[in-house]
Length: 605
Image 1: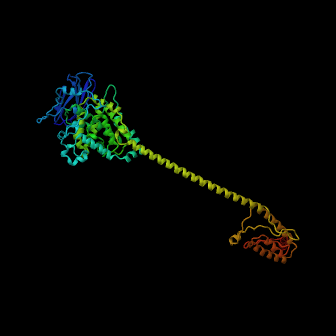
Image 2: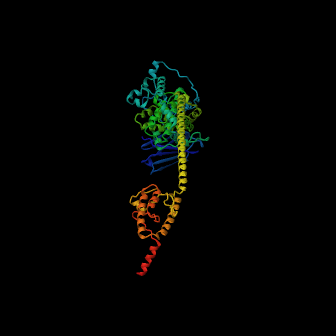
Image 3: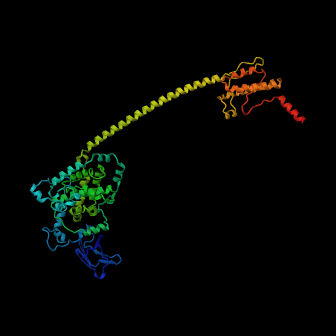
């Protein structure tokens, strides 16, 4: 027979059951309702449920079948109107256990078979635990007893499992010989391994760097952050996916005969697993990856070292040490945030816990070596949590919320490491400040020396320029002529003509603007005087004197003393004009007499 997929919901007066039975005939449906028992048969499907409350058939029940979807829906009235049926989403606990035809267990839970609820009620009414303190000191047994009774797994109910799994043993747990290792030896080896593998450089790197990434992880809002239980309903409403519902239907419903000490250790192991799960969710931002199975397994001492705890503080210290030793992100703020997340999940009730366990079960189911941990722990936790009272789950949230976990509790000398790191950082900052001050002082010295040298250069240049201006302001004139009183030479260098520049003639420095104006005016006066003198000089003497003047002018360009032109002019006619003639563009000075003669010739013609 096939167990069909089903869902249950309720309102104050009715219970609604939805059963998915595709490819069946409507004429073959068979429904049985009797108090807490509900049976449904439609070949080849069979479903039997043990309900948390009583229902009746009084004529108000209704049923329908959707042929396209293959859904059979039935509304059955409650025997007591307004009663709330607790745990309808715990599908595994609703399924009646399968009977065994032989090899019955020595201890059988009658309540799980749908009979008397006395045993279940006694378990539910157990006294509340004091989660802050240990209830009983741990007493080590003799070595002979330990060799015979070494157990592990959920509630320490398993033994001899790893003797058949030697090849996968190293990939599943860190315990080398689980069958012969006592709980005390496991704990001592765990603490030694954590102390050895702890990396101070990695811790300090995450402490002083990666702040942006860390803030993103801390500000991430996981799926449980949206769940908020209210006063009317102590448990938050949790929605399960189709895959999660299918997995719950596949679980075999069973009971776990646990004594008081074993139940206490089971609760603490559950806290340890939930802490590892919430850390992985937060550091992967809700998207599990290929490393999620390794992360959850490593962070949980229960899964990696088969550890059994005796107080909530022990669980938190173990989780904190392992967070700072194994995963990628090793910051103390992630530890405290994970503790707060776990407290919120327990506050939301067992449905929220079950959803977390189903997620861990799926992660381990898809990982080759980790699936063994499902058989040892996770599957039993998923079945057991559906049968416990919600008040016990919610009661565990308060000690988690009030827990005080400090860095000193982890026994990894974190305070000493941080003090040493602060001293190193302070020394580096002081060294940088000294280098900065020395470089700035050197820069100031360079600036002051350069500014002083520039000032000296400016003073020397200004003094030299002032001396040149004073020298140039006094005109350098040669001796006056004996008869006419005109100056024979002027102390300046004539500006070369464009023709002289093209032919490569030697050039001299151009005079200043005021001096040029004075020289031009003086030259024009001399030209006018030459025109007046030329009227009384014969043509031959004029031409000879002009040739002498040209030679003297050419010699003037090659000498540096301006007075040489005046000395050359004394050797020729005293009334001759000093005419500077360029090599390629000669300038001829024409008198007024020649202009009048040219006009007369044109008139005669």
